[in-house]
Length: 233
Image (cartoon, rainbow, N blue to C red; front, top):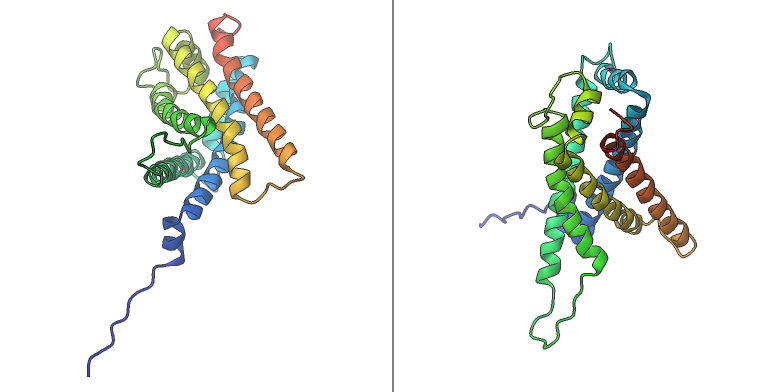
């Protein structure tokens, strides 16, 4: 008597990950997580306008957050690990969805129909620019590998040293402009994916996306511009 073979069914998580809807949901969720981080990061950066004691003190406080339950810098490294996982998942899903979109395009027509809109193409290239910027930003102000001053425990001085160079400030400004477009389109796209949009809420969501993108861009750009113009030194 032959034994019946049992075919293991894929898990719900694996099925979700393999679907287009699932990948869009992962992109939307990780996008919201990164957006919350950006808001907190921008608010922290603005402490540069209150002088070195404020910014350096804030950076030192982040390293002690959670004590005595957590050890020194545990919270900071946990947050970094979660953020890194979100960035990787976001990037992988974006790449895989892009490949699926290209594979699904019809061929053999005299005039090919461009399915990707201007906003979608901007999102793709903006994502690449931001990915490269994250690597540079870590090397510049986290590991201090390429920072011209490189003083551990002195983020104010390191930030001023970086933005005092044409390339340090220039790279940051270009990346923040790309971030503005990415957040503007990404917020709306995430709202659609997560089902937050509706006929009544569409206008409010679009206004929120515009205001949020503008606020983040102005907030982030104000720091290098202040250093480059001598307002912060």
